[in-house]
Structures are given as structure tokens and as C-alpha cells.
Image (cartoon, rainbow, N blue to C red; front, side):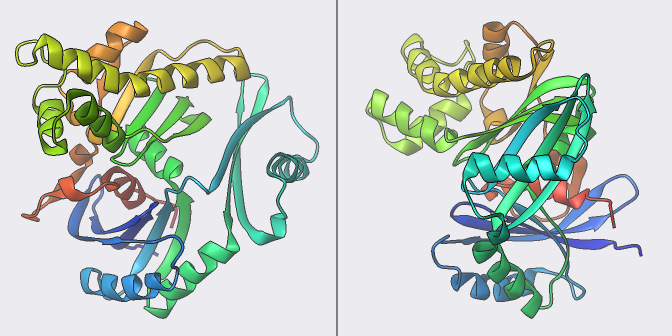
Length: 326
């Protein structure tokens, strides 16, 4: 069955974003989008959101969902060699590590063979949270094709944009960030990072004693551009950015401690953070490896006049739009 129009829905911490994409042979076109405030503790509100999304969707409503939630359990872990009963090993690991009753969760996993390891990527989301969402969408006529994590969506984008076989992918959102280590198209490590653009701006405005709007203007118009930023501004920007710098180093350290494999050869940046001037150059000097900004918008065409800059999960939606297993 060939499906040309797909609705992509990303469910975040306090926001839900929806995009309607038309699929071509090599690219996708954004036809419409919408976004809504969302309270994780008020699932009944999702019924109204699902109803409102109908106005921005197509008649068939084939739907792809991505969850970007800190409370969703995502775990990437290696198993030495080739286990005899992989599924049992995975379930035992999840039960013992997170001390939960697995029957209360929707669980999915994939695995890859990397060197001497079987690397498992597992995801768990509570049925008490996910089932009401699925039911509300189905009631409004949305036909679900798949539900996945933000990591799946982000990896799909980086595979389309990145030729380097071994890299750290840092996706910087407004509210938080996600760090992934990818080797030969396979995920080896995932870390949720609570620091995002909002955190950087808050620290910058407090340390400089300025309004948030002015802090945002300095960050995105000057950043690390030596021709624009003053020495004083650069000091405060660096201090604020280095909260993320530390998280990059911790990700690299954790990767080495877990696998003892060769280090990544580059760092790939996506998300809102790529709009900070010369951030790639700053981190390249610190980590002594190439840092590259990649724009997911290169994969999309659109005639929509409204700015997509208002979207916090645009990259994840693009990744969903390229989902091709149906």
C-alpha cells in the first residue's frame, strides 16, 4: 500500500506538535502544521487536542507518532557475544534496572551486532499514559502506522544528512537536548539532557542582568562571532553554553567506559542550537574534532508562509515524515 500523505505527531513534555507531509520519491513536502500546549497530568485534554488536529490534517489521517518525554524509559545497553535468549535477557534487564512491572508498559526493542557486542535499544512507555492517547486519536479517525521515540526520528534524519560513519549527534531543543552516538547507522548510546536553549538563555539573562529577549538577541545574533560579540558578552555566552559542553564530554566519557571502542570522529548538531553563530567552531576547538551543523529543513519543501521556527520538534517531525516501513 502506497501512502502519500502522513500526519506526524510529536508528544513532548508540555507541547504537542503536528505536521502534515506529502511524500515524494526523494523528499517530503510540509503541507500544514499545528501545535498545542499539553499537560502530562491532564490526559483528558488530549481529547480536545486530537479533535483540533483534524482541522490541520487530511481526510485519510494516516498517522506517525514520536514520543519525546523524559519519563519514557529509553535504554541502550550492550550484551557481550551472542545471547541464547535475547528477549529474555532484555526483559530481565529492564525489570531489574528500573524495578517496574513490565505488564504495565508497552515495550519495543531492536538490536545490532557491533564488534563483539549485541547492542540493544529498548523503549518502554506506560500503558496508563499511552493507551488514552492512542484511543483519543483513533476516535478522531487517525489511523496509526507506528509510534516511536524521538531517538528513532532523529537517527532517521541524521542518516539522510550525515556521511560520517561514527559520530555524536547532539539535538538541541528549546526545552532540553538529546545526545546520541551512532556507528554505521546504529545507535550505541542515548542520553537525555535537561539543558536546552531555554536553560542557556535563563543563565545568560541572569548572569548579564538583562531581559530574556535581549539575551536571546545576543545569543542568536552574535554568539561566538568575534566580529560582533564583545569580550564581556563572549564570557557570559561561553559560561552559559558550557553547561551543554560538559554534557557532551560526559556523553563521550560514558561511551568510552561502556564500550572501550574508538572515539567518535565528529559531532553533528541539529535543532534550535544550530542558529547560534559559530557554535560549531567553538566546540570543534574544545573537542579537537570536526563539529558540523546539519539543517533538517534541507530535506523538506513547503509553500507555507508561516515560520516553522515556532516548532520545537520540527526535526523529529521530519524524521517521522521519512518513515518508510509501510
